[in-house]
Image (cartoon, rainbow, N blue to C red):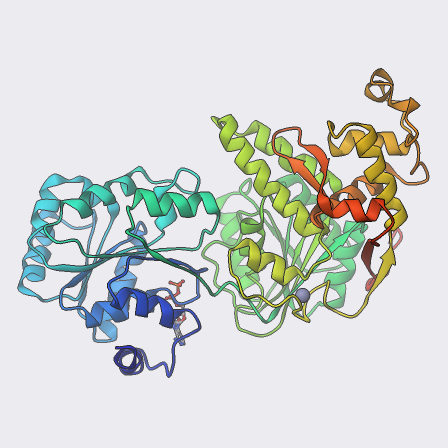
Length: 520
Ligand code: ADP
Ligand code: ZN
């Protein structure tokens, strides 16, 4: 069967072989198994349902929320010689009827519909006599309120499928990989004992680095100046920050543009075109920039601030190196970024407590990424659920050779002892305050100034101490109990360190860019 699939890939698409992952997904679908495929945009999802569609006797119904893309996809298929049609609200009743008539006659192998259509009983009755072999649900995370774009109409998919005279194979596709959303897709689409594949997340040509404690403005200026003939994007968290970073780069003689939702449509289109046509090399932008922009030769993506979660980060960083040539992704971390993101979670309208807890958890994963001393690529791929990932990639801030390991065992012991003395009931900030020897009200109220660990790290700044604690969290020595004010706890891994039986090291990146003085 797979041989035949491969022949079709060659015959219709002209590709000599499947990408890693595609083959297993297709095999699962062809074997009649419900299938959940989690793969990022661009990994080659379409082939995974189009090839089975060609091989199954009946029709494949593709449910897709993107009306604007449906026509393009159907045109592409027609261009390849694969008979397909779409049915959505852009058609008149007569056109819809005609397409259904032709479908019944067997004119199409694939039919694309918008999920809203399935809410119409009349429409479902019209579809019922069609022999559906496969239902492919695109953007399947839309069924979950935990995803980034919940669509109520997706809740109609399950009743639609169970109303069919014969149950087709159901294959769901998404790029969203969080566990909660995954579980929702399986239950809300009623996937029957599905095989689940997570694949295609690795972007070999991209390197990943996190820098903490940089002078950010100096860093991005130097970086952009060192890469003047390359295109790059600098993401910042707020419009204000975009404006000031962009103004600074321009004042330094760099051809920078800016992009955020506070600009007019014309300004944004203009800025985008200037970037796409290489008239400006570096774009300073909020996360509003990038969707639907197809620029393949972006050589670097710098994050001036830490984004809210790893999915957002990976999507933005992933805009580098679309052409397969090397791309560099650098995240500039500072503790204030955490405050901004927490503020945004707290401010989010209509968010339930449960929702906030969920967002905090994802934020903590993002913070862990910023502090881990593990291979960053491995960290990302594990986050997305890929297994079988080597612990060394050779192309990230951890694996590259210009880092030196520094022994921080004594600092770690001080931190662990302090947390134990404080009875494991407080958050990162208060622990840091006590270690710093702060005289703030809360410390004095709780009488922590009388602890033997009070002021043990007084020669460090509070931010440095917090960074150390976050590093120990990321490395699994400490844990955070969930919630708005997460409490730091000691984990088993810390015990041998406390007993002096194990050492803790931190990898320090040697500065690659010299700091500039403020007046340059
Ligand atoms: P998405 O997962 O975003 O839907 P597509 O299905 O559009 O991605 O595929 C992304 C690109 O990869 C397309 O240009 C597609 O033709 C190409 N592609 C898919 N499968 C293969 C393959 N096996 N070999 C080479 N190119 C492929
Ligand atoms: Zn690595």
